[in-house]
Figure 1 (tube, rainbow, N blue to C red):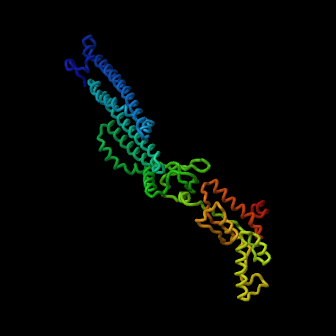
Figure 2 (figure 1 turned 180 degrees about the vertical axis):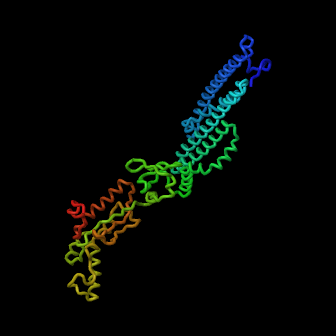
Figure 3 (figure 1 turned 30 degrees about the vertical axis):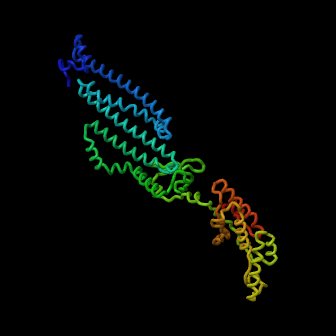
Length: 423
């Protein structure tokens, strides 16, 4: 809608227009030149204001950051919060000046006002994003929050913010009340639930994981279904990142933490030791009763000397009191080479300096298999570090594998013919 003649007199916004009319230029051309002049003046004023405010905020924020003890302000500067805040007042000024600049062009003024309002929404969203990121980075510097899934909660707020911003922008573009969009949103809820299914499941999982303390950043977890075995390095709204021990990264859905089974090794790391559970498989054909001469030979092993003397006395006493015919070894009570070897394993482990004596220490015979009799070691190493743990376990079984021959026993190996033929 255009204004003419005297309606424009004494109006500062039409100073250029009045001047051009006086010089003999037509009203139509004068209006457009007046618009261009006002637009350029506005851009220059807004640009100067933005430059000045940016410099002032930047200097003030740096000085403030240097004098404060907390690093929250330093993190905010890193996330460019001060630069975003410098845009607020220039944008507000531009919104206020648009009705003046486009006074003679209602349609263009409406378009410009919509455009600046959309810019304002985007700016608000970016400021909120910078604040949330600064808060996230700050909380991660605090020990009690380093193992919490902060990224998940930040992403939830950002998703809500983006949804609100998109709805508001649509409302501005279509000149529709935002409440109508919310009404339509209820009707389209099924579609939205489908689109944001993973995010919703991830949010629920993040809350449950945090409340139940199921996993923390830095936990060693094993997720066999996804081939993951390593340290948990990130929990976000949609995914969990695990750095495997070969330094590869496995990414799994966050909701898998509550829908699938996984192993968290935190209990082991917080306990007094790391479990060693491994068996030697002894050939059955070598298992036998020990003769008195064989028992005497085994007494030369220092770890068994006292045990064999004591056991020999008890067995001899029992056999004598019950008139056992010892012309056959199978009669009465006897020592066996596998039983004495198992006792030797117990004595060796109880004297091993790298094992935790306050936790379970056991050697046990498992059910016979087609390969032989498994004798299992079940103990805990005091050192839980992976490299040292593997060294301790190897040291134990190096010794036991070398010691087994002293008891006339053999460890099962796949026959050579089968290894070659594969049958």
